[in-house]
Length: 288
Image (cartoon, rainbow, N blue to C red; front, side, top):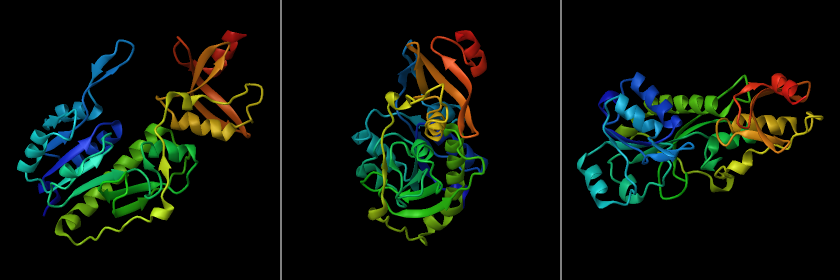
């Protein structure tokens, strides 16, 4: 079957999902339906905001659904009636139950941004940055009832010269790499000539859901050699959310850009509480 004629439903919600969809679109591979999570309140005014994937779907004239629950008999009936070749998942944000992932003839595949069985769970991109991981890549796996435990269809290791990358850049790199891998493997998967390989449970590692408090840095402005690498990795991993920050005179200071020079953390840009982003040198002048 030609890649362009594969009928599939795409499950996704985040920017990671959008990067994957953009790459698929470049190769004329578009889903017949997108399933995403419902709009959520955001910002100080708690404005109901659609997921990046819902916005993408509307811009690309792809039908989109945002069920509150996947355990819905009408949704299941709808998906069965579509007779899809397979379902694809990339950063959807919810566990997909067996009554859904078993529907398509060629099962449900997940694009996961780590070399499974390492970094299963909620925060693989951030966790690999935090751990200064050198063995980074993407996996295409077949979904089963566990958390990222299904057999692996194909994997590819990535190499980055300017490590550590920020979360947004690494997320995009892995999403695009994963989509390309998916494009490469789909025809053979549909033909049934690929036998997925079970993961080695003894090598499995899990990553936790990230919380706001995780972004607080152990930082001493008079001794920026202390915890320099650990702090830099947090700044890179926690871009945008939950952000990497420290407190000065009871004010929260978010570090938005930094690097390591001569074994010291070189803070480049900050966003002080209640103020706009600025150069760190300008911030220091202001507090003196």
